[in-house]
Length: 100
Image 1 (cartoon, rainbow, N blue to C red):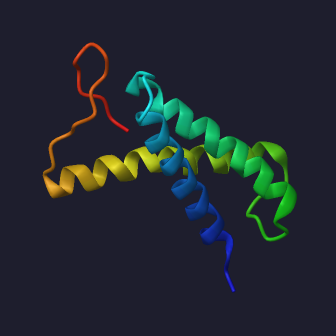
Image 2 (image 1 turned 180 degrees about the vertical axis):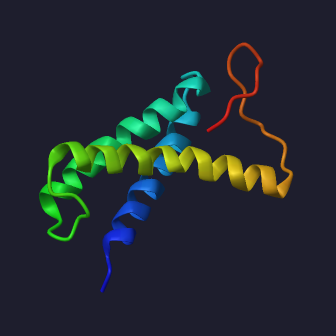
Image 3 (image 1 turned 60 degrees about the vertical axis):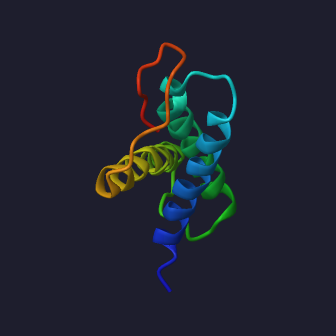
């Protein structure tokens, strides 16, 4: 079974959930893509260490896969929001709309 795509999708989902949790705090939303990328990078490295079928054999590649997967959470959120035509309720402290 090809489980590599499952690992990448899991990193994306976990990063999205972390971003949603951070949105509930007072932290400015402009930091959400950075948080998603950082979370994904950490999860990518952990995945390489604990999962034998993870799609990377070295730390740099694992972290890169994780960062891209984490940032995919931001893009997925924006894509769904644009397709559905939904209005964003994500606002930073200065009133500008921010993207997740």
